[in-house]
Length: 161
Figure 1 (cartoon, rainbow, N blue to C red):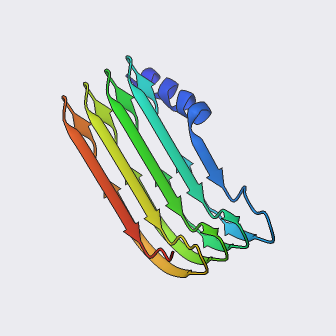
Figure 2: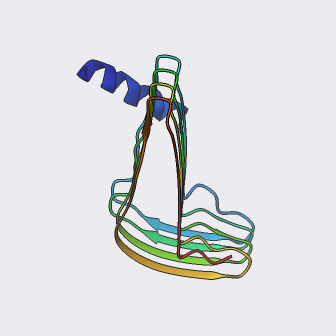
Figure 3: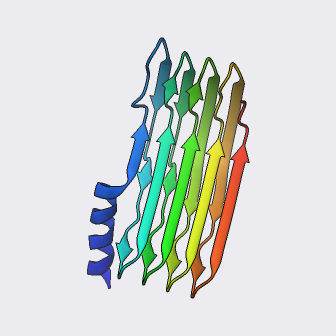
């Protein structure tokens, strides 16, 4: 059992979309101080797992400032199931300003046995000249689906558009 989990984790690191402070264009500014951002997942037995994580990106004149301890997104899929997860924290676009100080944002999910799990989490994003100031301690979104069930969760906190 342990060996299969380790193989899933390695697979997910290759296939996941993971963007941390990689986009700062057009006069944009991105400042990020990170301690332990993690995205895990995997797929087994004909399953589909899709995960996206964006933290502290800036574009279109936006300014992003993110300090973090332990932003985590976990997930996976097994047995013809589908798992889709998206997490966006402290991104700024089109002149927006985002300031996020985080301790322990966590999103956990997964799907098994033909089930579908969809989760979206958006915290402290700013666009169109808006300003987002968010200080967080322990935001958690947990979920998952098993046995032909469907679970959909959406969380949006402190975003300015």
